[in-house]
Amino acid sequence: SSQRKFFVGGNFKMNGSIKSIKEIIERLNAANLSDTVEVVVAPPAIYLLQVQALLKAPAQVSAQNAFSETSGAFTGEISPSQLKDANIHWVILGHSERRSLFGDTDKLVSEKVKAALEAQLGVIACIGETLEQREKGITTQTVESQLEAIANVVSEDRWKDIVIAYEPVWAIGTGKVATVEQAQEVHADIRQWLEKKVSKEVAETTRIIYGGSVSGKNCGELATAPDIDGFLVGGASLKPEFIDICKIKA
Ligand code: PEP
Image 1 (cartoon, rainbow, N blue to C red):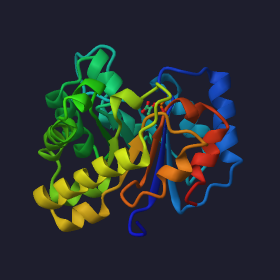
Image 2 (cartoon, rainbow, N blue to C red):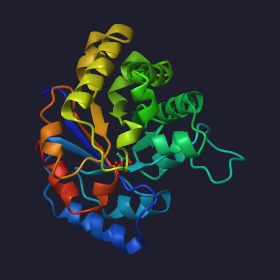
Image 3 (tube, helix red, strand yellow):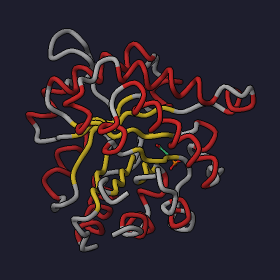
């Protein structure tokens, strides 16, 4: 919708090198991105400063994760305030790979979201059902309970700093993209939930983006859905077609 700026996130996951990431960022810099789209790329933590130094506005940088505490004895973790200190203003939280492989439960995700907001970061908050949950007919329930855990720590005036990424787990990294109808249905559910549980204004202004095997080829059709306000792109964010995805609504 026109009151929600289209948002395209690029999640590099654990991919890339100093050299390949430099090339990806130079390609983005050369793309002449319009400021009618918000583009945010998330390299592995070790490359955040490199990307921050090289990337040109209006594109922005995001971390792929952050911890729920500010500092202390948490070996291997990075805090939201450290991201802020490094001029990184976004973080992806609750990604399905974090949830399934690294113990990011709804509770931990909510603690991380709370800490990120306290540090004044923007949060790309990921939710989505597994294939098993979809087949059992509990997609709505699953997504709503993940969303509720997050919403519990977001005060009404901070929703502007949240982007909800609906990422069906069965579509992530599988090449099996959701149909426009499947994605639109869940996005509409999420927006209705926000209207009922938070406010009409938050429902109308919060970006709900789709993730799961988005490509240069399939993004155009998905972008026509009224409640799809952008994409979180994994695999294709490393490729030249990411530019096409960034420009699909610009
Ligand atoms: C992701 O990592 O959030 C993602 C959607 O991955 P892919 O686009 O590769 O499915």
